[in-house]
Length: 239
Image 1 (cartoon, rainbow, N blue to C red):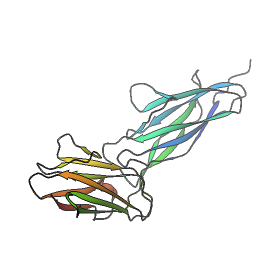
Image 2: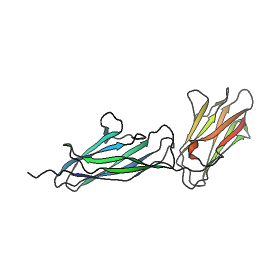
Image 3: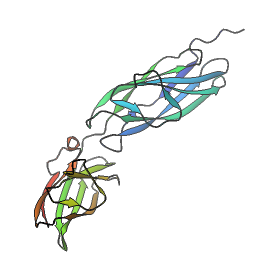
Image 4: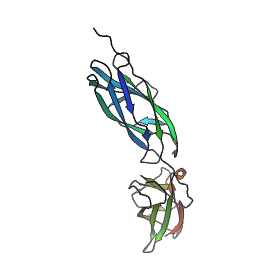
């Protein structure tokens, strides 16, 4: 009987470039699992992530242990020299939004059901870059209880998504359903994921209820840490 290969499974994957929701950016990294053995193997791999990253929804991976930062993925029955490539969703999990940095993300390592492992491979994660997004908010000339919002991508990179926060004084409500209220009712958030190319402008209208006459309402772009410019806020008299 031939001896078992002590390192039968090799791994290949790309670094993660997080994108999408700026507060919880994500990416799918392609992981290739190869059977380097001279015999058929049931191949899988372990995935370990740093605490500020987590695994998204995946049918290929299951948690390992109780740390919350390690998973076992697979296995796949592979003939000698054969490979399988799977998408592994990685999601940022830190409480505050982070921008413009590259970090060590974690490690993958091939494994067989009998515990033989391949060489571990580290990979990195790059967070969304900081950029410039200009905000303009004006009262609608035909409806004093509505405002017209414009956000212009003045940066050098496309923008996947952004949020607009509306601070509502006592008695003022945003009636547009796109603005999701906070638990305390003091503000609401409009999440825009339409995508903004360099130089493009996203425009939309918000309706408010201001029963007691004109009130000053503050609007600002979020997450605030992402934007390098100062024209990300607006104070508008509504009603």
